[in-house]
Length: 488
Image 1 (cartoon, rainbow, N blue to C red):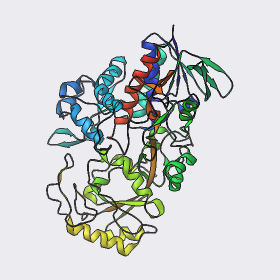
Image 2: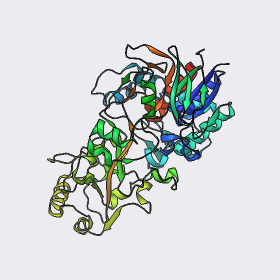
Image 3: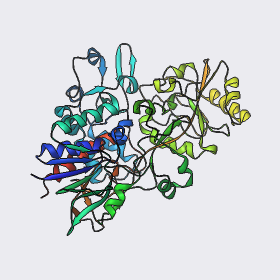
Image 4: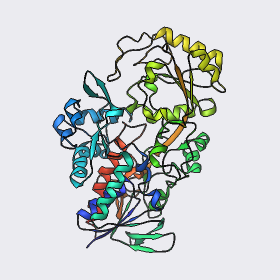
């Protein structure tokens, strides 16, 4: 029986473990942390998974059709060509590489594999649909999430992996890979325990939690970015793989970074439940505007659905004076905010007049902020506003413009939320082929070494369509695990 060691217990690692076990392998999953750390970054997500689908039946095959709301859902279609086009927009329009084409092609089969294995999915009614005239209109090519969000996903994947015979070893950080004549044959933990295996799958994340590496790759300002997920993603997977000759790939100058409340707690504190920590994100900005300390707008808040901009706008906030900004909404926009905004710890101000709201914001240039708001309101007609589509409801004569959903801020009460940058994961990683094999500098596979998840370089470059990360982890996890089980 082949033996496979998986390093990391997030979505990618658990998919690799389950897939290898289904191929008849004996599997051990090595988790660097303790019980609260199982699930890695995946546990902090909303569980959304983007996949290509041709029609309604492709979606219905993955969900509980007994849900009475299903009959009222307009899922539309999200064909492979559209998924590919969405990925290309974050590659400067360049041709997709083999890993990206694999992600698109295997997205629906992989979700079907998860569903058939026992993972439950449900439509994202509250974040990806607008209820109008009794119909749920889904937007942005993203329709389904795992039941129970990220926490529900990894808990279920763990149950399935353990039921398939996989062993989970906690508090077992890997210190070295065991390399025998060019064949990776296991791992040595920090305690000195040797785990012998025919193949190793690295699925232990990137380096976003390592302040020194962030600073060296992205610039000194990134030391102050909030870490959205696990504190354990310190770049160990990169170091381990490079020690046996692995090559690097992808964009080491960009990362997934979103707007987060300035009150976001230090995620190394495990006292707060994962799902509560996730609720510090602030991504409803398309229905308002953002101001920096100089009182100026600095992005096109309506450039596209937030699915396609939120992973970049955290970095845009980090570039502002003081690395902060304020998201401003009136009562109309506030009705469209995610529930995340309403949590008790939100850095939130409210006032019956815009001038009184601005007076409350610490450190902002009040005069310039009022000029910016007046100019915005004068240029925003609000005609044709429709949150379910890119409505072309745009400002006139502003720089930067607001290209969609440009409603004037006129309805009291008015709201402001203070945000900064939260880093989610890094894009640069290991060079990996479509079989999940880690490659050396010559482009040749390193025997017995595979990778999956955020550690894979070359999947994302300048951003990504929301929900693609978990899908990429599952696609490469499934593939890596199955192929690792064939190594003897």
